[in-house]
Length: 87
Figure 1 (cartoon, rainbow, N blue to C red):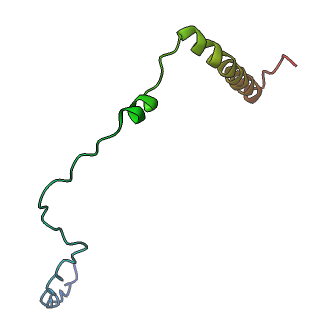
Figure 2: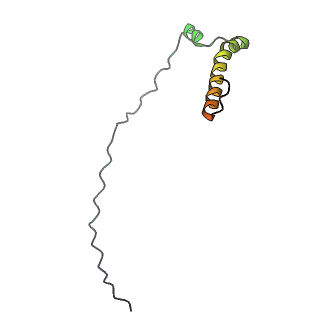
């Protein structure tokens, strides 16, 4: 036999408060005209441009540092694995 369950009426909800007005963080000014382009002297642009180099020169400059880093990475991986045998 089921007992009767008392159901209480739902409480009356208060009217929702109006949302506050959005806050304006900046004021956008209308642009009258775009700014004038900046012109650089020829000497500045020529000095900033990289000089083409011989690929063999680049290889000689980069090979030794890259080889040392690669060997160090491989040695560290072997050490982490516990397979360090080239003491």
